[in-house]
Length: 36
Image 1: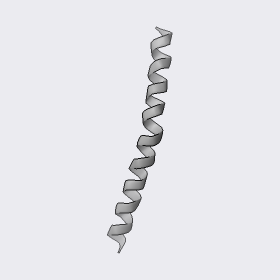
Image 2: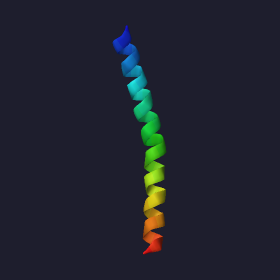
Image 3: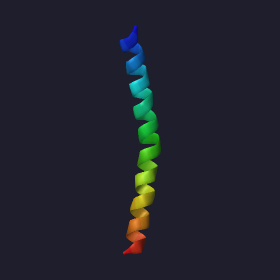
């Protein structure tokens, strides 16, 4: 079923997205705060 595959891919994408983006945002935030 294509829908099941799309759902699995989407959940995997969101998992990786948050796994990468959240630490990255925290790092950028600390960098910006130090610059001020």
